[in-house]
Image (cartoon, rainbow, N blue to C red; front, side):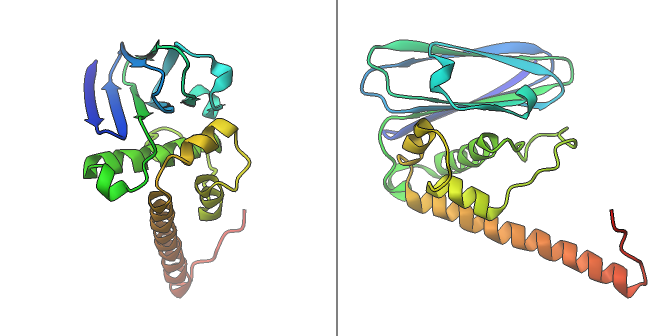
Length: 218
């Protein structure tokens, strides 16, 4: 197994990312103390087959599983007593798995002042991946999810990230700890990206029509 790990730390937020390729397993452990904030955990089987195991908190206090076990997102609320949370990931041959863990030490009120560029990028990616998992939509990084055709709309993401969607209390409380400006920026970029993708499809359709191809109605 080839294992890559990244740790990004600041006073407001710690992010750990572990990604493996090939068969094998890895384990991550971290302490959570009283006074620490929320913990967001996103586990993903990006290709092939794998499994995951978490210990140290009750799953009923976390968010939902999605995509037939291929993704799972947990939100761990602040604890009253010190505890150790353990995350295990297992992968079969030719498989790829990833675990991303963010520990919110305090509210991120001003992203530019409190987070480095790598941390901001990692947090943005984690928020998008977690939001998609909450809606039951696969991560854009999932390599063999062709059977999943659902795609999020900007409006769906807006309702979720800005806080008007009907989601669990834990998720909403965690999102409230993230700079609203960063959440809005993510949505703006998604809006621009989806517009470009839609424009690309329109250009392809127009080109086909110009050369006399007929559209097939399914």
